[in-house]
Image (cartoon, rainbow, N blue to C red; front, side):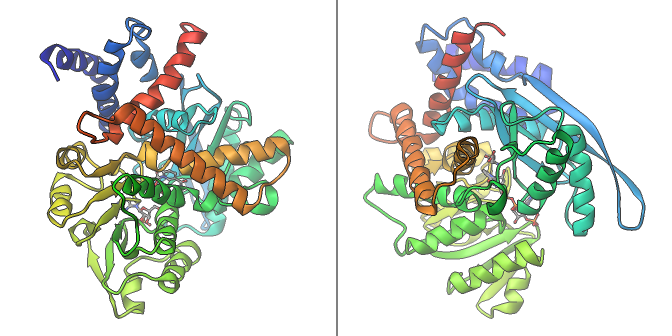
Length: 451
Ligand code: NDP
Ligand code: 2IT
């Protein structure tokens, strides 16, 4: 990149940092986009001089509210709730809710910003948003989680709606929480609408939505491997996380003939040299979703499993890595170890799991590397399909939804190739995803004028 372009990017980032200096995750997400999109804007007359990216980094609306609730002992707690309504140029705000003690405005703004590009890539008409709370569901009873969700929705319900903003799950928000949230919305508004996605099957949910993010990530990785005439067959796969995304990524890898050797949680990772087969995966799903246990228990149940405390799985030899836990869980050092161990493909199931240093290592080595906004878009895409089914008041079969999901993931892959293929044949999927995501939103913003 020439010095003039670098200066332009630096100038833009200085402005972003002045306004958001105390938000490191948000700045990290914007920097990655700026590095690829600003040079593109400079080549395209229609976007030049319109300050589109500067408009895109400012949320249309950022809501923060008090959530007071009472625990089982009768003690009163106060948490902070948020909704970041980032961009509605191409559709109503859409994106998950995260309940985790680390949640703050920086994390939700980074996630909402990523969501705008991701949703644009899905081919569906969805704007971007994200929300959540610093509430920690770990160790809480079902009743406590219910009371918290009800209190949270009492305020959030004023700001969302099936044509305005449609939240869904993310870390700490699964089918149990969506049920409690939906129940309170329905009571307050006295209407049964598709205001949330990830709903239960019998009350408006879509088949395949629980599986969609994990399956979609693997479909995307499969498309990348196909460009090299390769596949998942007999590949050793390291997966991080053991929640929704990790579970279904593992299931799809097994279906495609790969061997899953790791899963993790915030306590550490488990390594099973024999592979985590269907039966062992069913144990993990029950452990995590029903018993709400820790992944370390796997090593007690299976002799082939070893628990490594306080570490991430990236030191294990693998052909393919699927980070499916959280942001910045794979750093530059981890990336170097993966490359030394001949890893050929990394597809992000989580949002921004690779640090900038890790991403640069993968790009320098020219391995297949998919950023989350492309490879994990299957979740929100299937949320979009749930919205369509709700509006039509019908439900599609498992096969129909899975076919649509596969088609969307392959469209996203094509878009990345279109904007990311470089001379010499290497595809920079980061550049491809950022530019393809940007173009659709920018064109809509241009058409709608300065608002
Ligand atoms: P879950 O809550 O179901 O699972 C999260 C998993 O990640 C758990 O195993 C959790 O371990 C682990 N984890 C969370 N925080 C940390 C941390 N700080 N360090 C190490 N491990 C951690 O969430 P999901 O599976 O839904 O989400 C995982 C990732 O995928 C997130 O980045 C999310 O934004 C992204 N994503 C999710 C989508 C969805 O549809 N659900 C769609 C697209 C992206 P522990 O139990 O110890 O906290
Ligand atoms: O990060 C994400 O894309 C999600 N958590 C899913 C959002 C959604 O609206 O389904």
